[in-house]
Image (cartoon, rainbow, N blue to C red):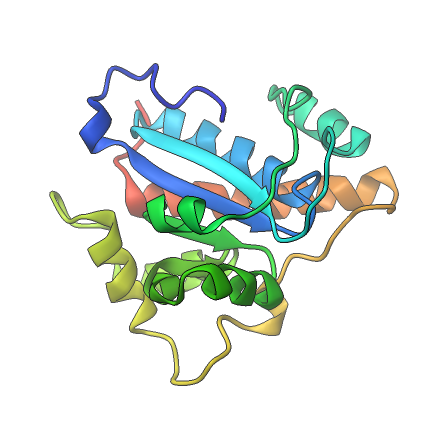
Length: 196
């Protein structure tokens, strides 16, 4: 969590976002920090958190720390944690890196289907549905966006999955961060007001 409540916004108005990957040491902590930075720039009250679908313990990947430090974000203090039903139930919006992560989320809470998206899927569908309307609850907006999916059990498209950079060279982490950053900008624009 990277500063959600220091925005002068009342707690009931805080958007709860969960970012999910496998071990919670590379993609999801990067997505968490990048999305939180975009919400902060727009003064959107948000608690952005992340978790992994497998039990992993430890700090973020060194390359993830390096790549985000170059963007002015510090995730060095992050510690991985496992996805739980409580985290999913509390989230207004769940953003997963791959379809298998979506399935992992839904295994914890099948009712989360209308608010769980691939990280790169939400900008595409959200652009069609339109930005969240003034006063529209995020869960209602997410359900409106999810209704645009074709029928079937698979979320998103294959090209919207974000592959794991773990064990890859630094340039792969940079490309992953750039992709997550582009999606974060689009998501923040859809969910909240323009930056100050």
